[in-house]
View 1 (cartoon, rainbow, N blue to C red):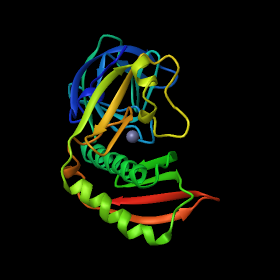
View 2 (view 1 turned 90 degrees about the vertical axis):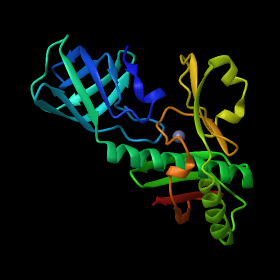
View 3 (view 1 turned 180 degrees about the vertical axis):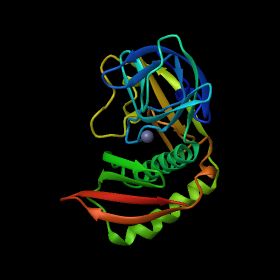
Length: 237
Ligand SMILES: [Zn+2]
């Protein structure tokens, strides 16, 4: 299995690693450790490069399965056992960390106001959208919602990562903010992201360590997605 460095240290941009598997058909490598996020929970995978000495292999895609984290690369594949160095496109990833954190803050604010669960979401660097079941929405609520969101963010709330045994997580339904639990059945440990005092939920993605790093958030648009459902679009920075 790959040591998933991004899971405990979102700020790690580089790592030394050893190739532990090669899939020549798909042009992808399994590594013993990685800072590359494989995507999931609405957050896209990282991009970047692997370096073998001065030779650069562009990482165009990252995925995870039961074998570990696969790095899809352009160019000729190194052999199992090769030592290399990996580096993510940090500017893009940091923007995604800010965006992802802002989306959790929005979840918290919407939950506090309406107790509404999330039904879907997506993000790209600097922009995110979340869908809520929000029957009691009034268009007049947009400005106060944006103000409240920015007030929480400006308080520089700590964003903490912890791990809970599966049984404990299953006994705390508030950890699952999506309408349907997305926790894979075989998962034994659940990673929890806590924006202290605002939003706590099970999550695999990467976030900044304080909401102060998010900056200003604009509620760009609120669309109706059918009766009782709203899509909220955020722009960060
Ligand atoms: Zn999340």
